[in-house]
Image (cartoon, rainbow, N blue to C red; front, side, top):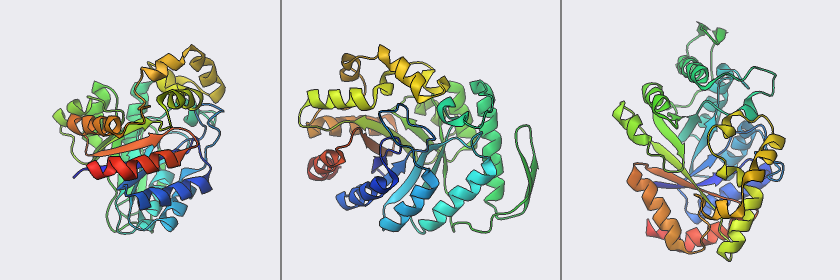
Length: 317
């Protein structure tokens, strides 16, 4: 099955605006929605960061049939995995017979250090994620759970509100070791951009939904789109591990001083107003092995993407 989705960008929009966009995306014909889980935006210019689990309740109320996912949460530090288990179970219950995808990953220091915890190296975060998923799985059985592991303790906990069907846990990964771990502990795969690491995930036995986000900025001209993307989402051009280790929006603002409009124009953001370029990018992701491809429209003008996709892009699939 091929499913095309729309990003509810928590870093750029207020919760009430996100509800408006969720309803509009469903009306346009998108198959699913993905919403980001951040404590901070990447930069102050983006300007928002509502609590995802509250917003999801609103999304359930203003939509009727569209599937929904959280892409992605890091159930390792900012909130205990036992609380994530309850939050995701409640959200899935509110969507009733719709598919709810629980995306998880090892997170970013930007969001996870806010309680003063030490930010561990990636190998340790992978261990924490493995154990967090183990805790969530135990609690989703509906049985009383006590757990004493290397990273988490749970005592006499039981979830009474559970969905009829267990949500798939889709694990994010960007390297060979992470892909192997994702295949071992998850029920699906989650990525930004058509990362070919999905092949490693499949080779290690990965199975389930494969979700991939594409970034776009639709405007009247490509130059206007590049300018908007440069102003609102320059962090997309940062390379290496900076996105995982920088602690505050101010640090990201310092880092993106190295980014130019040319970097944005030559990068992975789709800035063309030509629907064929969007169609080709989606098809490339599908050809790479993803079956759920969703698009993040950067900037305030969400209607520009809705109109383009309703008229020309979605009908092509």
